[in-house]
Length: 290
Image 1 (cartoon, one colour):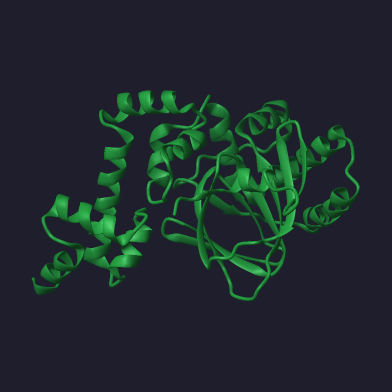
Image 2 (cartoon, helix red, strand yellow):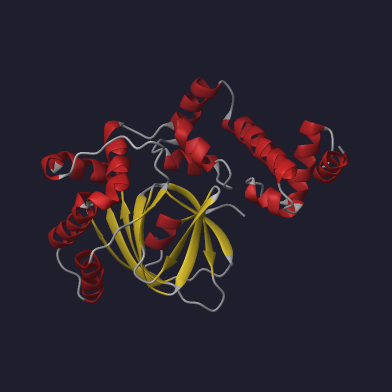
């Protein structure tokens, strides 16, 4: 099953998700309706998530973040695996932040923001936020706006206040580094988008949305960059990842197929055999015998 567009799913269901919109920004406050224990989601916008109660886990590649009461994260646009806990409700407030808005806030408030140093290693796609009491109080104060919506100008000011409070906090330097990197580029790097998200079951339209390009533009620039089609590139990268997992883990073939971005085990086994000459099970048995 392909990943769900997190942003559009919320925006298109106002009856299910309490929401406020202004100037391209979207705020949502809800108890998570996720049914499956694990589900892939993606968003073409960056987002801040604050947990009021309950718990959940969010995964990206080989890293995980535990979301519980009073925990907030800043997540870069892209795909994620959301894991719910059985019989535990997750009450959350989410703020979706388009690149264009983030760039304008950085540009207009550069003098007020602290200087940043280039981190020693790349910043993760998700940053757990440091939350002083004032920022926690901000999230609590926002609940009233969903019951009695203010003007768009007030909403926009509240949104800007949240971003500046987070980025002005020296303990949230990685968020500012991430925002600065976004501000430096007209659009996301297709290479980074693909490398960050190829393990998720996304369509080409989804990859185009994350890269902030139309589908024809995405395909054209992809071909120029990689000298092949997106479909061929994705298949090869996913098979290479499956090969690595078969070599280095004891995970089942079904788990490896899912974690490598394949929609079903039958398709995975067929294309794996076409590339490596053996089924995944025979491939693993041969490795074990060496």
